[in-house]
Length: 282
Image (spheres, rainbow, N blue to C red):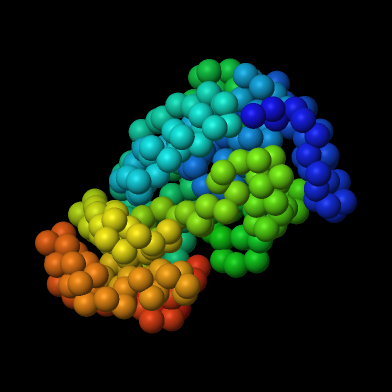
């Protein structure tokens, strides 16, 4: 793919993209905190187009990383052409994260960015980019507070006012396969605030989501872990994939083998931020 070819955007997005590229040019070299989601992948692609081999995508491997995303991150990095490395971190070392208060994302993001900044400084990179977009700043985003604590960390999408829809437009116009990839979130987001996070609960979520994708062939899934009770959320237009006795029986059997005591389907379907309405649990 020729990333230097001219791209066609609407005038508003084109102006923002020009400013973003001029901003990227001010750095000698950058690291992108690369989850393989649309935001970080498109940011990596634009940065690579500007700085070429002076960019590096780094994916964190941790207990909160969905296992299915590891190979996907490798694939997307290869599609972009960017150099890609992994580092290991463990958010469970942070008491603030494990306690799972509404400020959980602050401790998670701080742990991640501390590792990224350390790597950048040890290896001579001048900045770390991460993929928060302008759409996300409308809600409760404690993780963004952690970003502001590091002077070499930047959130270019947010800083230049790119919405999620505009980022997808950029990725699509550049010709990348991931432009319509479902939203991505760490496994900890499946555990209601107030329920302590541990490796066992995260593993149960990861295995359950992989099983549901395999059985029901859904693109997007969240398995909320309510102290051993699984509540399954999928996109509204994929709910009908569960309307089969065989599918429901197989999913229930698999999730109970994983360790869940009850298996429920949220008939409203998936939407972001749903757990924030459940308050705290003992």
